[in-house]
Amino acid sequence: MTVTKRPPAKKATEKKIETFIASAPDSAKLEAEKKPLMRGKREQISHTIPPDILEKLDKVAKMQGITRAGLINLAISEYIRKSGI
Image (cartoon, rainbow, N blue to C red; front, side):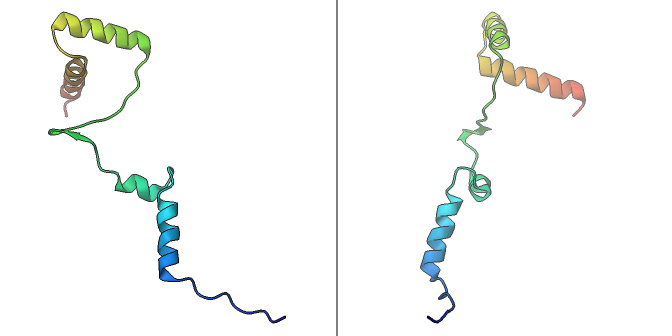
């Protein structure tokens, strides 16, 4: 039996392999290609908040007559303003 070199991979096969690897959930390439989810001129983000803080946040928002998101944006804006940025 003679030992021979492996034939070079075909371009189509290499592309399929690269596509398969890039589609993995933990693929850095996939993460880099993700576009932000935009809502009008705003970018949607995800954030977790402890239930007790969320409950207080909702109470304050209701007292102020604004939405939860509005109160969060207001609080962040105030914090940034007070930071001098």
